[in-house]
Amino acid sequence: MVEGMTAQKPLSTRIAAITGASSGIGEATATRFAADGARVALLARRADRIDALAAQLGASALAVTTDVTDPAQLDAAAATVEAAFGPADLVVANAGIMHVAPFHEARRDEWQQMISLNIMGVLDTVRAFLPGLLAAADAGRPADLVIVSSLAARQYSPGFGVYAATKAAVTALAASLRVEFGGRGLRVTNVEPGVTDSELGERVGHDQWREMLSERKAQMNSLTATDIADAIADAVSRRAGVHIRELVVHPTTP
Picture 1 (tube, rainbow, N blue to C red):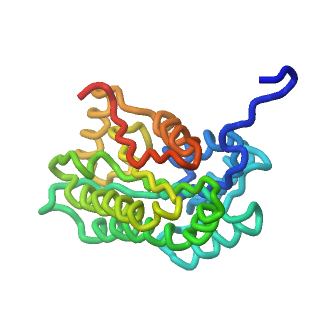
Picture 2 (picture 1 turned 180 degrees about the vertical axis):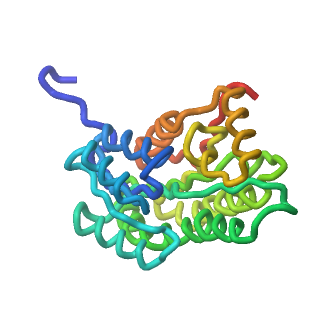
């Protein structure tokens, strides 16, 4: 490097939109992207959380209160991001929910919540932001769609059946979109985190299963949200011709 010059941050030209940005992996990814120079749109329902995060990150961050189960809100969010920063060329579909219970004791409304958020929410996120992603790809610039699935999509445990099914669905979606749009230069990366210390398990409504998840995290020396954010940031920082299509990240402890 020439003396006096500073290295360009790896995401300094990128415009990112992240769903589920109010906590956990979404919050950590937004923080990492901003540190790497991206302009970052924070999408989540909890306005107070994303407003506070945007204030922390500074002028490069924009809070956009969004319920991803509402397609109209996602369309409005994409338009808001474009008006503020330009079309997003880096989209992380991260918002999700997990309900865990024995199949015969599970509540149908909890199944519906997981289907609405974990599957339809991802589909509508992709639909809303796809035009901007493809425009970037067609122009020869890096364009990334990151879908946050789960290791549950391929490793199965009692009580996780419907959650695992929703995550298997978005893992399959990522693979299909990669085939459909890879030829145009859109990189689609499927991320399958293992046991991660986040609010996801804390929201499990059944006390016994919530305590079981907490014990499992402690025994396995679980990942942090920052661990996943770092892996995502590394993948999307590659030059346009390099595609890391899958990230399977889990604790060293089996």
